[in-house]
Length: 514
Image (cartoon, rainbow, N blue to C red):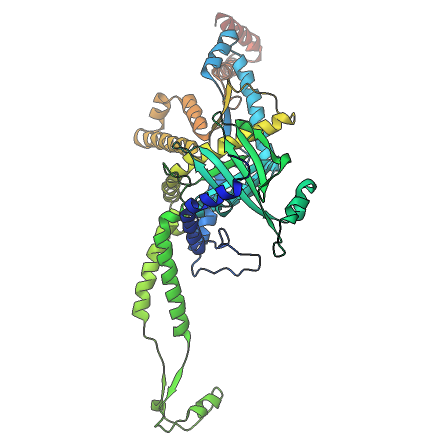
């Protein structure tokens, strides 16, 4: 990417982006119009208001679900995993060193999690999730604990056949006074009297080794201080897609899949609202050839007595109740389909007097499985780059120790991984409950290894049971202590208080024999 060609290259790539941008704006009009507005909008622009709120509620609800899944509160969304080869070498040197390394990596995970909690990353991710749902694309700039979200109408991108980014150009509009002083005079000299702003183009080029080169231009003039490069783990620019399509530079939005239902719901809602307003209007008609006068009715107060005939007066009625009922039933069916699509579980659970917790759980799980593909894409394109970027920044500040990248790598444990563990947990609980109900608790305790069950349940929930569940040695010591107490009580009851010493000697002899 040569300098001086940023504006022309951006203009050429805009034509390829226009179809995706138009679909995103169409989806925005039916959900949240301010997410992706048309060109030329300002703070004083009045946006259209949809006749239905299902789209807006669905986008906000689904964005919240993505936020809680990708960045769960008070729990790391990743684990530092040691390479298998390095793990075998550590076992050969000292088998106990693995536990010390696990504790050290757990401390690093918690430190990164605290950095996320104390920064504005969650706020940026919520905005990014809404952009992804509506337009299918957005660009993140993660720098020093902050996250900036760049909309689709402000950047263009090209990707290789494997979907990896090759070039990104960002266009930003700013005032000339915000430019560096050394080029401000050159820029303002090229401005016309009507130009109050300038376009700043930021060019990002990805190299074969994953590193990126960055520079900025204004009016074809290169900003010398903007030239730089980042390593793969230091790259602050993260282009995201919601639905990945092979061979396409841009992704597809989640709302685009349900655009037909949203458009139909909007039309039906508008028809019912306008028809209801017309039906609510009360209009009296008076027979012009009758004895009752319209002025008499208009000027008479409530409860007044006037001369006239009731047959001369009638009320205008629309008489469209049957047609409205068909439109209303169709609208409710569309709302139910959209509620499933946008995880609005309160609308998908049946309306009955007795709805069990198991029924609610099954409905919620069946809906959340729809997000499996979304989790897969975002875990690779968002979560892993975020972890690498934060770990690099914190190591540079001295907040984290240096970690050998060839031995320790981060692995995502939320999103699609969490869904898989959740299914394992449900199957395990159903299996145990079925055995207990069919064969009884005695058979369950006889054939099921409870310690193994506790271990598998903790793994499915992502909980470390070290120090929480008693080991076999601890259980054996407690059983032995209970036996000693029972023998002493029996000896005291049968032989009297003087037999306590004899019981202690027998217990000591049994301990030596064991």
